[in-house]
Image 1 (cartoon, helix red, strand yellow):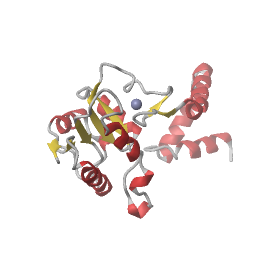
Image 2 (tube, rainbow, N blue to C red):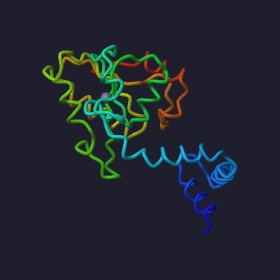
Image 3 (cartoon, helix red, strand yellow):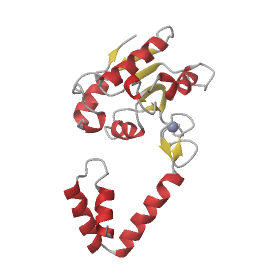
Length: 200
Ligand SMILES: [Zn+2]
């Protein structure tokens, strides 16, 4: 296989990129500026070694704590629970939430052999105990995707937290059933966040 073929094959594995788009990318790179290519290659090489998960919320970060957890201007009384790091970015882009996040690292999915113990749930419970920090958490907003697995995970968390004084809510209005947070437009997501419903 030629380098061009290998690169087309490599890029076609990226999410949302088919073989045709992969070809377009490779031919674009062939004509691109060498500095741009070197920077891009260097950043890709450094990506994995430089990124770790935040010690508090589990989102991807380059330091021990992420930008949100280390920002004293954020309201730590509200924690928004999401499936993946990319969901933090999606919700942040709406600009309507000033609380903090907790990344589960997936959802409960018996078919795929993923149980609650495989997710970042113990750390969430630790954050909710009054002695974890000076701030007492008042509300947990469950923002898992509106899928069967997302709903199962939400229900599991509701049951886990039902005997606490913490308000539990879930994103509801506007999100399409079976959809993915990543593909919701900002307006839909803002409405869902503002119109969240109390579960317990
Ligand atoms: Zn964090």
